[in-house]
Amino acid sequence: MNIFITDYNPVIAAVNLCDKHVPKMLLESAQMLNNGIHHFKGQNAHYRPLMLKHPCSKWALESCANYKWLIEHAREINRQFQLRFHKSHKCEAVLDTCESMYYKWDWKETRLTKFVQVMPLIYRNPDVIIAYRSYYKGGKEFAVWKKGVGQPEWWDTHTVIYDESGLLNYQARGLPTPITLPQISHSL
Image (cartoon, rainbow, N blue to C red; front, top):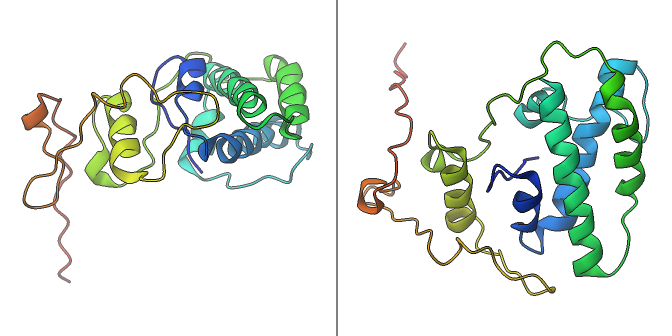
């Protein structure tokens, strides 16, 4: 489960998805949105609650703005699915239900919160866009755009460079250095 934040604009982030991710991310987005019905209404709608403790699921339910961002993202993924695969997806009904209900719920937070980064540590970066673009370039070798939509404009210009240790070399590209994680001692 993931939300590929390759752009802060939810529509552009959806258009950036490769062909293989369009149906997968549409389903995952619908599942995360469906969790909101369970969370706020205490009932199941289209799916049973799924992966409620997953960082992306938690992020989606953290604020009204997060949920709305994900709805807009999922709506565009659905349009991309129709455009690329020439058929409709049954997730559209989930999106309709969630969109008709979410603004009535009792949200504790209304502003957009920090996006989560669900990826191997080597791709993480203080800039979520750089992180997800690097993850896409370095970790998704299957990424192709052959179903009527071209690859994102950053695909050819965003280079992921590894140093001799196998870690991303951010300095070589002038990118912000990723968050340094503390060393963990494994001794007892």
